[in-house]
Image (cartoon, rainbow over all chains, first blue to last red):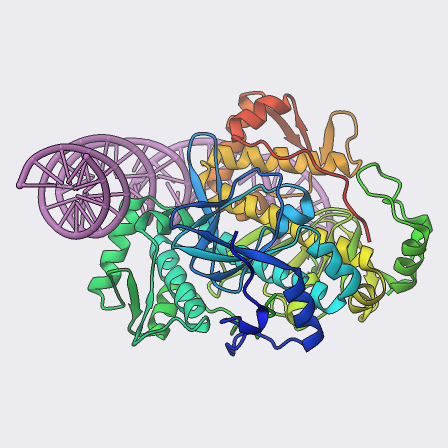
Length: 244
Length: 244
DNA sequence: TTTCGTCATTAACCTGGGATACTGCCCCTC
DNA sequence: GAGGGGCAGTATCCCAGGTTAATGACGAAA
């Protein structure tokens, strides 16, 4: 594990998407960081079923949470972007029932093993932020259930692309009109409960309809409103979120 | 709103499923209770999109969380049984993106509006428990995504019935070999992303196969192991959970 | 008693999306 | 520069599950 990056030099914190912290809290957070962990694309960050645990903040790169069934069926639960907290379920519930895999090369900020209880004891504000992040992630998963349970294939794909576009945008990843898009069609399929083949069919339709441009690991959405209509997808504007 | 039931007389707390609390914590919890709220079956407990509300603990009865789309499609996210916490997302994230509806007549323990911040400030242990409950509910929703995204209709129904049977059992609801089962087939369908008609077909098959008895609002499962095999569903044994 | 509404049940029909299989491309490695 | 693996893209076939519609059973309301 690399030595920790001092939180004062955090590349994420200046972004408008993140809530400011008090200097005192920042010092405590920084003190609880024990290092950085790098994972290559495709690596398992946290293993399914692992009795972990350490809590991480995703500093750079993309990852996803997933569950697998004994016969190999896989379901992606949600995607993780910079600023997201990983491993909290393992910390609170003693073991993980999902895995986490890196989608790109990933840089993680690692907390000390006793950091979370320490925050609850000494820093109610930070503890509150942790719970906020947990509630926020649950909201994402709530959305995923609706998408997978009640949307058509076309709606699912449109909703996912809009969702990821907006999140990437708020993490400052827009360049020109496009964002980096490291998912393969298999990832999209596994997130949406579809087959790869059908995912491809739907993507073709979206391309031919002029809704998206998706090539060379980059995604552009011509008309966000139109895409939201296609996906029957209107989410809350993302509030300013805490960052640990 | 009815006057609060003193927590020392709580009918839930003695159950083995719940973690004991210290007398000090119990006193604080009790002091934050401002009353009880009764809802009739079918009533809206919390409205979708509602701005912040109060936090409740479900004392008695069944309820469910759900999301609706503009055209009326509905997805049930998960079911709420006695001991579950309601409204935390509203508390943390300023508004609710799901609704809560009562499935049976329901009795809720209401907390003061400032109870949650108070716990974080003064009772790290309780704050931790709140986060535990949030992480636990997210785990349930994670399971729901897998079920709806990757299981067949037969597997979905079997998994849901096993899940509810076990939860009802741990809430002390088994009488003879059956549990109360207040869901209609529409509820099952909406929880599993199926149509009512197909839900009925699958239930018939389970009945004819001798896997379940489901009549008069009661559910019996002959062989839990067999049902788990049908549903490809093996969950963690439920740990002892906190109760607010 | 009748009427009405909610649920369960079943049949008949149809389609969205799964399964399989094959092609071609790109990049990596030897 | 030749194989080989991962991924995108298509076509063909077909079935799990959706849709529509009709029938009962039951309980509440009038």
